[in-house]
Image (cartoon, rainbow, N blue to C red; front, side, top):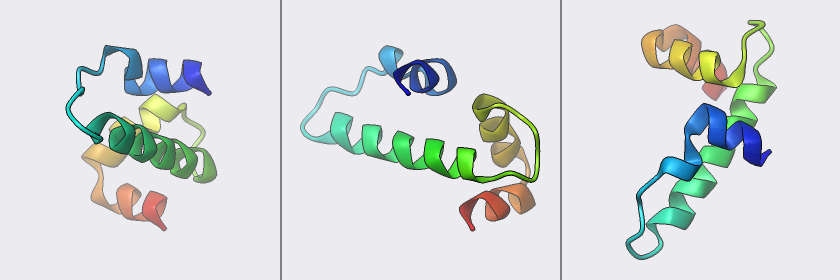
Length: 65
């Protein structure tokens, strides 16, 4: 799981350090990872699914449920 978060979300390069923001973003990344893995209509990797969801609002709504 850590490898996927690091490669797809670049978690190790994150520079958020103030207050509880780092924990909050870590939770959001895990939610996004779980939603990406749950979505089975396209055969893409997690990073590609993130990119596609950023470009295509219809696909984003499909991922979000």
